[in-house]
Length: 332
Figure (spheres, rainbow, N blue to C red):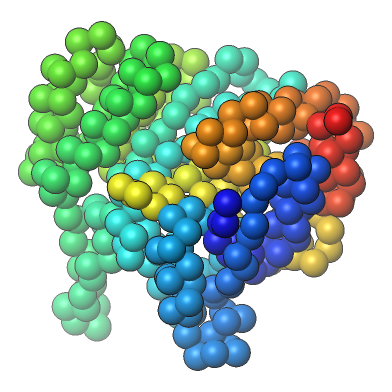
């Protein structure tokens, strides 16, 4: 199978090399077609996303990418957002679960966040009204709300999950969030076997840091989903452990939650586990569930020993060191 690989920048090249070593150790019949994007590509070619990358993703249908730096407040628009919009990757799915026996405040956290990926404030519809005033327009549509909410309910049923929580701020944004909530209420009636609850986003944030075990599957809009999934990551070990995937009708791009961490790039300090768990999601989806389970078990065994921890987990191990430990725990 051929899969498009975008190494990214910052720590991206290091953690994708780690992933490639694990793929080799798992003896998977996967061929990576490597095409990069980002600032380094712009400096060399004059464009941030080369057409050959779009062509590769369209052809292969599956891509996995390392993080790419997006300048804050200036410069080019997020490449992640551009790829999601280009291929209509409407579902951003982020499992929130500790991948090993870590010293955490909460045990038993196991939630999955479904985040609508193509509209809301992240649609980037902005305008300068004057030098002193800027507007950003929130866009919520029935079509895109229906498909993300239905995806969350279908996932819950297929994976024997018990509850779906829809997260909005519909008490204030009665038209946009109100539409999203109304659609959720109607779709919930089609799934009588699944418990349905409505929560406001601020209340959700509070409950996530008091009793996160109460959550199962959450479905929400783009901005809220981005914030809540980072909050969730903090409950189970941090961004360096959290996988993710962006899915459309027939194309998926797998990427972990964390950023490019340019401050530690090239220093052999990055934690590759988030990307490895992201790759495990990919394996699940290409009917390699046994290999995915084997990889997750190896990560779990690796995290039993604090000597293996990288700096973000409070240890001093290196990218190459923890990669070697995970490969050793894969066994034969």
